[in-house]
Length: 331
Image (cartoon, rainbow, N blue to C red; front, side, top):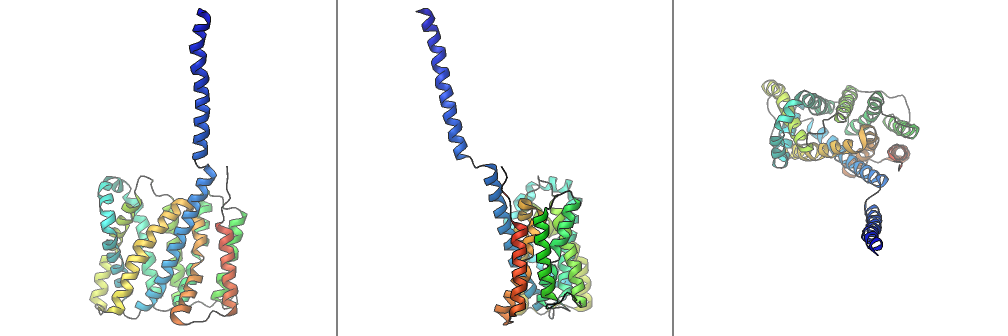
C-alpha cells in the first residue's frame, strides 16, 4: 500500500505534465508563424516599400525637369533637403537626440552615406535636368540596379541565376526604350550626368546594407538630412552670390515641396527600410520599374504616347523585375 501511494504522486504529475507540455507545444507551434512565412512576409513588405519609393521618385524626375529652367541646381537641392528636414523633424528629432552618442560613434559611416545618397546624387540629378528630358533621366537611372548587383556580389552575396537573368532582361528593355528600338544609344551631356547619379545612388544603396543595426531608421534619416544640408551650404552660398536667387511662386514652391516631402522624406525612408528587409540587389530589381512609371506619368501629365515599342519594352522590364524580385520560400 505504501509502495502504491508513493508511486502515485510521482506518476500522476509526470503524466499530466507531459500531456500539458505536448498540448502547449502543439498550440504554440500552430500559432507561431513558420520561418518561411515570416521570410515571405518581410520580403513582400520590402518589395512594396521599394515600389513606393520608385513610384515617388519617378514623379520627382518630372518635378526636377520642371524646376531646371527657373531654379539653379545647387539651390534646388539645398532647399529640397531643408524642406525634407522640416517634414521629418517632428517624427525623427526625438530618436535622433536619444541616439546622438551612437550616431557620433558612427559619424564617418553616416557622413559617407550622406555624401553619396543626399549631396552628390541629387545634385547630379538636378544638373542633368538642364540638358536632358525627364524620360531619359528615369530610364538611365534604371542602370543603378546593375551596379547594386555588382556591389552585392563583391560583398559576398549570391545573386542566383534567376535574379541575374531577370536583371539582364529588364536592362535590355531599358536600353531598347532609351534607344527607341536600337541598342546604339547617343547620349547627351545630361545623360552622362545621370549615369554619374546612378553610380552615386547605387553606392549609397550598397552602404545601407552595412548600416549599424543600433542606429534607428528615423535617426539615421534625420542625420543624413542635416549633414546633407550642411555639405551643400557653401555651394548654395556661392550659387546665390554668382547666379542670384530664384522667383518664389507656385511654379517653384510646388515642385520643391514635392521633392522635399515626398521624394526625400517619404521615399528615402521607404527605400532604406526596403533595403534592410530584402537587400540592395533585390530592391534594385524593383527600381527597374522606374522607366515604366516615368513613361506612364509622361503619358498622363504630358500626353506623350507610348507606342507599340514602348509597350513591348515595358513588358520586358516588368517581366525582368518579376523574375529578379521573386522569392523562394525556405524552411
